[in-house]
Length: 259
Ligand SMILES: [Zn+2]
Image (cartoon, rainbow, N blue to C red; front, side, top):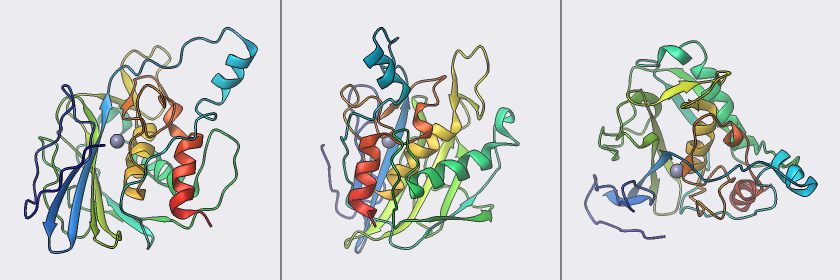
């Protein structure tokens, strides 16, 4: 994983691999405050082929449970992650349901809900603190645009490949100060219940689980080898697989927050 530390630069350009950003962007935002921006990318993942054997069928029923790959970011949420939500710009398709999906996705990460029937106890928590008129400090070009110390989830414009973008501000000792998430509302179609004939609609809750994973401090795993982990960098339309954590995602959270 390539990380570029840019002293005294608050707003770094997005590191790109191919035509999309897949690596976190690390910058030095102020004395002892660091910021990292992380995206989740729309597109084919190459996963989820049809099952042809009993063993493959069992794996398909619990995808990602035989892969314990994870990556840790250099921060942790020591206090409850307190976040606010700005519903302005919510797409009509999820106007009534987006907040519920974001709350469920947030709690999936803090509680370790997974597809592998693994019970766990994590020492991290999240608290929804109500609506706000603030907006996530993420620019339309997909960079972290400032730190007001308040964690906001909101909707707005992002580069076309991006489904959502999370910025994490943390101190040198790893403590997270704030973490914003901006969800695209200009390119992609969203649902909280996928349509019967789904072609290109994205499941909001799945994307939220991935992004809250970033806030909690688990990073991207390799796309092809660990495609079924929620922390693989791409998400395909018409899939709800990432609503729950895979074995690797959970192993990463346990490494950080295992009780
Ligand atoms: Zn990501």
